[in-house]
Image: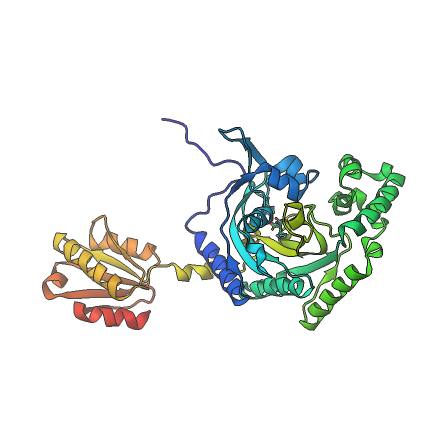
Length: 423
Ligand code: HAM
């Protein structure tokens, strides 16, 4: 026998018993986004490698170590998208969507990063993302945060998530800060690990984000970016925190929150949980005003976030509640060739009359007993039963599979109103 081929490490199948929670989460996301007037955009999974290098930044973990990059048959360097922000902006610039004063967009789909797989961290993972363009003031920052809170509430997980926010200031402010930070870490270079020593030259702000506990003390003593923010950045942040206060939305200002992608400025935020171990960031984002010009557009404003769907689903208390929405209402048992023939027609009539009815027709024969077993296993609420007698009498047997109900018989002409009354 040939050897079985397995899926790629870190890339998972989502099996039928898991898809109801996925569909439930996707539906909640769509519903919340519609309530705030956001429109869907669908984007390619593959983009030119250059796009990610120019937007995420050459010296980030993603670009340096994690991208799935390959040459296609024309010799062009292409990359499986590691995130959605760059592709979304590329599409908007290409199709002139930023000529509108503002745009509110969302997307969902797989992203790819060659990270070390562990629980909550995969090489193919699913993101739901939101991007809003053209709005300078902090009102849109607050809107995105309120919108995420509404999603947590809808899914019943608000109590498990905590909001952390920070301001990274403008590029100019960060350059001044960067010099101070490098000066400080140079003076404490012996306390740094190899990774941080390398970052000292390339991306020193990322040292603040180090997960190495041995660095906690030296990071704690580092100068704070907040002291280097100009008046406008401070006002922007202050207005955001007032909006959150007014909305009774609790947050922690985390001055060490710097994010792993280079494009951010001013507001950054993360929703974190203590329930998922090391991979506790469920949703993350921020402002990236500079990126539009960096990708060749007319300077404007942008902010967005993305959430990791696998992590979000791991937080759900009762994922089985979504099964209700996909379980069949009825399982159709047919015994004998006449019953199979007329039952197939009857099933189609039911589907014509009741488009919301979820009806599974047993298609591979067998006795009443074996078909009842399958009906039970299907999770259906009802069995519809058609044997020789019922065909002869234009009748249909009905049995409630959930409650220990008696089997009873209806005229076939009464079946549609009966089922309708249950839907
Ligand atoms: P990110 O922080 O790289 O940001 O990813 C956002 C979220 O995607 C994370 O908080 C996490 O939940 C999920 N995620 C990331 N990597 C993995 C992984 N390997 N396995 C499972 N889940 C993962 C971005 O991607 C930005 N594009 C967000 C954004 C949009 N900023 C502005 N607009």
